[in-house]
Amino acid sequence: MQDTSSPYDGSVNVGVPGMGSIVITIATDAPLLPHQCTRLAHGHEQSDRTERPGQGGG
Image (cartoon, rainbow, N blue to C red; front, side):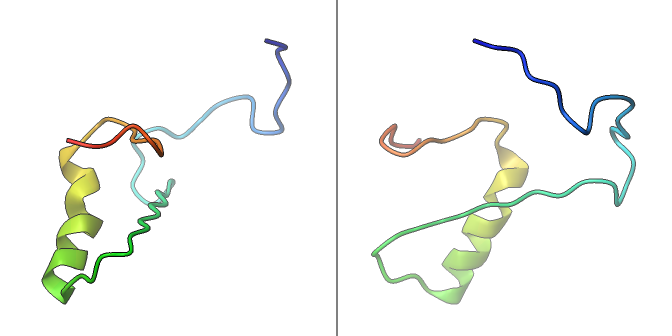
């Protein structure tokens, strides 16, 4: 694997409120009720793992 530089190399504000973001994409063909959508949206708070397509989920 080739190492490439990034315009973001340097100091990173880790753990500073308001200095980061998270993007979650959920795709399903199943109908969901509003409370189920909320539960899915807040699920990232309970998991440190990354799910990838085709891996299933727990």
